[in-house]
Image 1 (tube, rainbow, N blue to C red):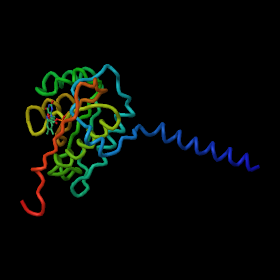
Image 2: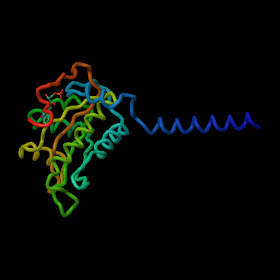
Image 3: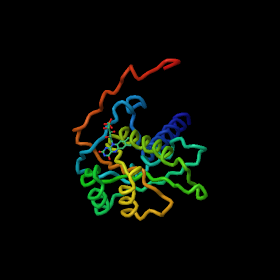
Image 4: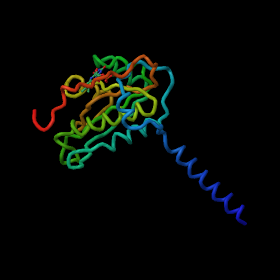
Length: 198
Ligand SMILES: Cc1cc2nc3c(=O)[nH]c(=O)nc-3n(C[C@H](O)[C@H](O)[C@H](O)COP(=O)(O)O)c2cc1C
């Protein structure tokens, strides 16, 4: 009887951990090591990225703080090659989109009556940083490429993605598996820290 009970317990522990594994694309990198190893990645291998991984990365974006908790963000996951190429063609500093298998476009709702916020770009920047960190933590690479505040670049993204009038593009983040070409920069500068007063 005891043996049977232990067997059932072992089975249920195993099934719980299997569910956790299949649901969870996270790695064991701790937060600080992820922060310090993040870098802009602009060269990618040919490997595609599972949609479930892209969705997990967007979930990390949605965990960001936002003013008055308004969460004015919207995210467009782009895997369509023609759309990626179209944005690469017209965005001057996002040419790497031709080589990335996917991109996440972080957008914000500017209409306060429709759940937006007048500082959407701040909230969406917090979401974008979470996305970059989650990307790094999952062994992928990405780069923030600017749409906002450039009207012409925002228009390119709006047209390519058919965004509604109240939705603005903050940035386009090409995502893929890194070739290993890029490495993190050491940006620590003690002179930038001020104690109690300037
Ligand atoms: C607001 C913002 C706009 C950026 N725009 C671009 C861009 O259009 N194209 C690009 O290749 N990198 C862009 N970057 C990435 C920066 O060039 C990069 O973060 C910086 O050189 C530091 O390098 P690191 O990310 O590897 O630490 C942008 C970053 C930020 C935060």
